[in-house]
Image (cartoon, rainbow over all chains, first blue to last red; front, side, top):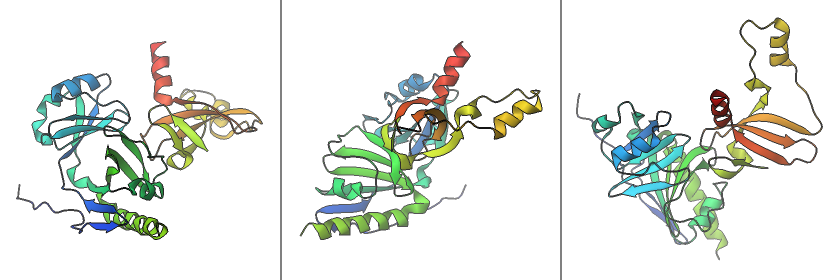
Length: 178
Length: 92
């Protein structure tokens, strides 16, 4: 197989409005793990991470296992999919690294910015929580990283739209803060 | 309108896709008489009161849900995962 060059989805420079910063995160390996019926705990045991309950993230070292839907979790930053042979017979394993764009949104008005795009009340969220929801009409995996800090994953094909929508919301929140 | 997804918790209506009456879960056998298929495909009750329909959590966890609601008061009485109902039926 030829050596392919990994490129970022956007290669965008971070933007800041009213203390809220939108940036593109480094592309990490994303592997979708869909355990076969009754095998969720066994999948977690193989990885040394608890298979996450709905709306939660399991962390261990550099890797984290992020709940991503019914009977589905994303292994982010872990071993490459081809090195997960131990999961044969336990889960359907799919490399999705190049299917998602990962953005970070940080700073005090982050919750106000996301309130314009995401149909959830995000006040009081804590690290370890994840939400499968929508960003406007785009699918979203929203990972809470701590106070005023979120990681957003949406389809890579929609990266520019997502960036545009979020920056637009940031500008509007900034306009109201005078 | 909000639906409480058994996995995700209370979520806004815009995350869900409406499919139709919960009757779709009771598919007639392949050799059922044409009347049964006619009823399954075309005939629907239009109750003033409690009704059940199917919703898909499209912008969420991807679960199919059976929602019990009241068309008069707009109350949502129950939201159950179709997969859980299937599992219960298989266990029976």
